[in-house]
Length: 88
Image (cartoon, rainbow, N blue to C red; front, side, top):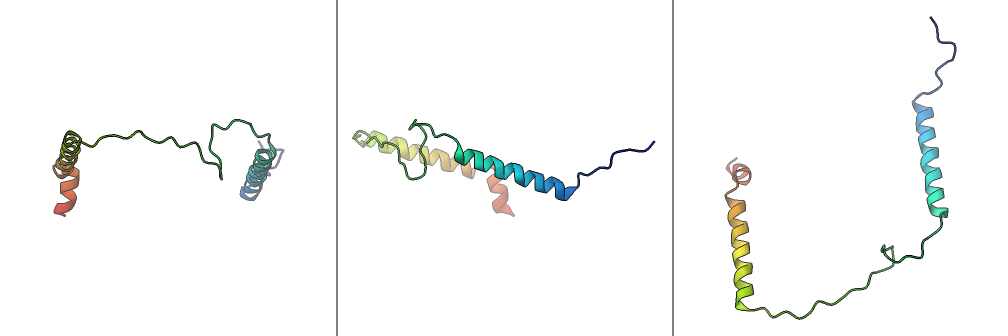
């Protein structure tokens, strides 16, 4: 049994078709309508920046931060995945 239609799809044809499809998509995206919505930041536009309120840094805040850093360092230094790298 023979195939009556030749197979005309080869690598070069496939790459050419893919390039044409990608270029067409880029042209359609560039020519599409732009929305008036300002929800997504675009190149050259910056969103509104709200200032944070003034927070008092007390001894309790410093102690909590120091304890968090100490706990993180302890967790990292006792992790077997990290200590096995140092032993090599």
